[in-house]
Length: 113
Image (cartoon, rainbow, N blue to C red; front, side, top):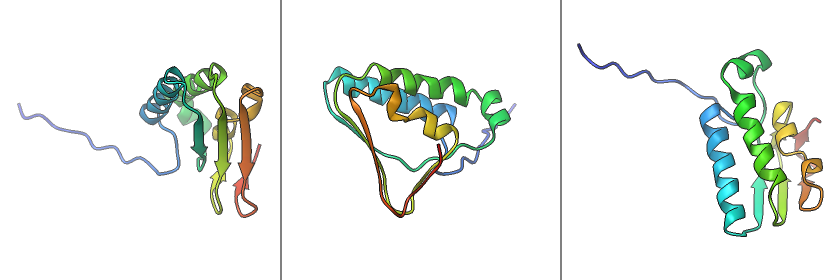
């Protein structure tokens, strides 16, 4: 029986379970190396029900956990014409680690909390 590979198209600017998990792991690794963290934010959430089904919320919470435990400076920047919306905002909200997190946004960026 031949092996059939399934190709799944993933929209840009959206966290999926695999990319959210990799992001959380990278944040933990940077913290372990005691490095400051700079995040250029340009994300949006897709559909809440689909996110629940695909475990995006589960792996997004790993990012929140990693940022909460981060002990170095974290700077989040929303560049011109970038957007940070819906569930993506919650993941990088600076109130989850107010001691170490700061957020900046260009006047031409779009963000919704």
